Image 1 (spheres, rainbow, N blue to C red):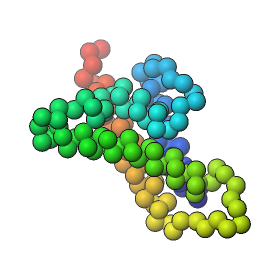
Image 2 (image 1 turned 90 degrees about the vertical axis):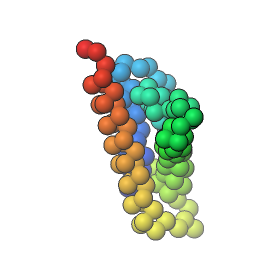
Image 3 (image 1 turned 60 degrees about the vertical axis):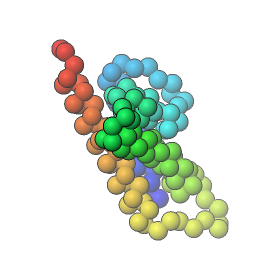
Length: 126
């Protein structure tokens, strides 16, 4: 499905843009999960950095941990069902709702990362 591949590319492009804008050098061979981790850490979206002694910090850490899991799931989904690989005769595509979910999750993650990046950039002294 083209939508699944494009959803993964959207995440990848977001990560690279965030890193490039900050002049952070990254290895071009990083997989999406590694790229996402590096981009999130660069803008303070690291689950390990949350104050887990508070209820809100604990919840935030869980959500940020799931943000990282999105990239792993997107990469796996794209590899199995995206448009980047040839398919065998027995291939059965996923129902459209999975592509819709992949796109929706990617858009939500990118918006969250972009909004966080913009907010953190505004807070930095000029």
